[in-house]
Length: 459
Image 1 (cartoon, rainbow, N blue to C red):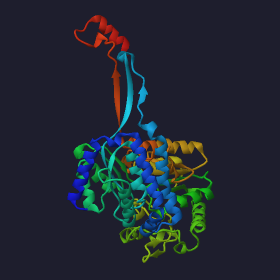
Image 2 (tube, one colour):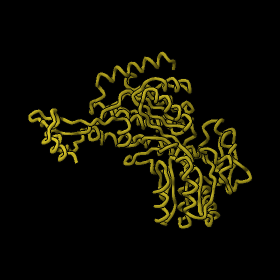
Image 3 (cartoon, helix red, strand yellow):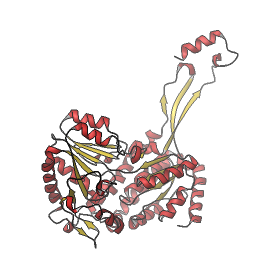
């Protein structure tokens, strides 16, 4: 899309928001219902697009994308009226007689930049939050998933006029042009490198942002863990979307005593879930493009591979890989993997785990498998990360009752459910002061009596 058209859309959205039409809760609910209806209507096309872009199976595409968007919309339809209502708070005696409340109001004109790995979920999930909060939005889908980007545009064009919700297609040039424009709020999901660019541009206008980034999310497995179940859940979290998930387990830190047993169970689980020949499994996805395929291949050190590692360049597939005896100096530990490669490292004490993690970039997720409550509490309380699970992986992102987001290098702010509504809202604090009585103590001229009253109220 050319810059003239982008400017025209942005200007129209600013004018439309100023009419106040999006403020009505009934309007917001109607718009959410339209979105839900269109998604259901085009479900088959969405599934086809996700298959073409990512090789996602019908099951995984619904479970991890369509179904989660519909779940988010359902939550918002049930709760938006309550979330948008004024919240009464206690008024201090010094403000007698008055009523104090907090009112959620929309930021205004918002920008949503989504990635390619979950191209439907991470575009329309935040959009549902933006609609519920009363905003307009420009949605910029990930350019590496063009089929999904096209169906997103089809759905949103069918539901809304561009003065309210619009899609801007394109690549890096369009992203940069959008980021240099003034918006009232920006929601970005993607890499840390691009997140820095988003934040730098937003700072020009002091625009608030939510950044959902990534990082090397560890899986900690101590000697008390139930290894067969731990392996099953680790493999699930690692290989969903062929490892191209921002909260996927990036690497394992396990107790040295149980390493060999854990690797054995991991191999059993990979075979159980994908079969002896993953490339023949129609539900096993692929890497998004040749660039990322080559990057992942460069991470695989054959001398450290203990399982898997076959590559199929014509379909951009990599067999699940387990690497042992990995060090922090290896290529696979230099950046977020974002693929079906699982390095295994060891520790000898739980205190060593904290020592390893405390000075490293804060990951988006952390997972711990243990039956030792003391060890669990030690890691969960001391280490810093966005969110995570105890004795499971990934599932913490699938509930609207908890916010999802990063911290430090893995992002800022949160989304999902109430947290998503909050992210796209500004909360005004308002005191409604009554006129039937006016206490004189705050006005000049000051005197000793009023000074004593002030001291009585303000302590």
